[in-house]
Image 1 (tube, helix red, strand yellow):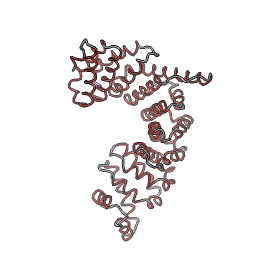
Image 2: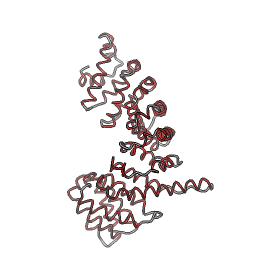
Image 3: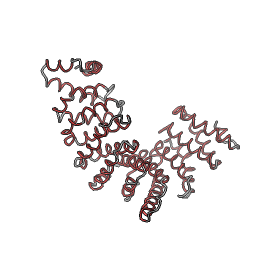
Image 4: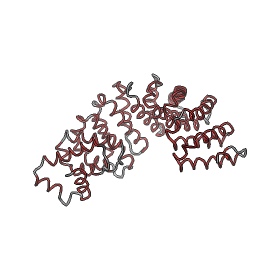
Length: 409
């Protein structure tokens, strides 16, 4: 396949490149031992391909980055892969539509390469911000002159690439942000196109997650303006936008606890309404449960008094989460508020039991917290009343069995 990638016939190039992209998706990490040969062939092809085949090659390179992940962060491999792409980055004008496929390719690469991309990060970030600023300015002029708004393709790709930088560089992203980053991002959050808001909210979440030392949301005015827009966009009609809004609110809550305490009731009101919607998208329901959990962990004193109004629906949503770090953060929030509002918790304790039973392997720290909640409730009742509750026909047998085996109830 690598030989055929370099064939002189363009149709053979196209077929080989498409086939190789499929192979990457299927084999994933199995390609790691061959990465040097693969990258040398892909970069040689990069110098030969034109037009349509170059777009297919961008896709193959991006797919490879996703397939092998952090294995790409090797100095030897980075020297093969990045310089030719950066040469192309500087050659393509801002208005050239071929820039977008390159940006999409780079987004996958920077996530996988991580800090190995640091030498080129500012160059890429500055241009992305310039592209965003141009679109924001064009949007404002179009509104003033009542003209058609500009296309947003470059804007969306730029937002996604900065998100990729934040995910790949993590805390190192703080060193390349400029003063007007959040001003421009806020303008993008207000745009009417759902695709723009989807990417903008994803970037808000990535920056909230990774800008810990220089946390921009310590500025209460900025925090309030961003949170207000995120709450406005908790509209399940636009699933992807709503998903990213939920996620961003959860990330902000985790890393801006002091400021979020003043906004917790407002945020909780927006999130908890989603629990009431019948046939809500499964992924959106799960993201909402995680966001509420993170808010509860960050602001338990503000969330606990309202527990009675949403606890059953929240627990049902928590039940469906897969065991992972996000589920763990949500359950830490549950533990924080359950102990602060025992009356509401006791009224809906069967739902809490069902949620706890959904865990297969919680961390030892979380398992201890869940154990204490279960036994604390049991010990607060007389033996007779506990037996009436726990062994009643209404208490689900599978849940009872799990809690007996794992928590010695």
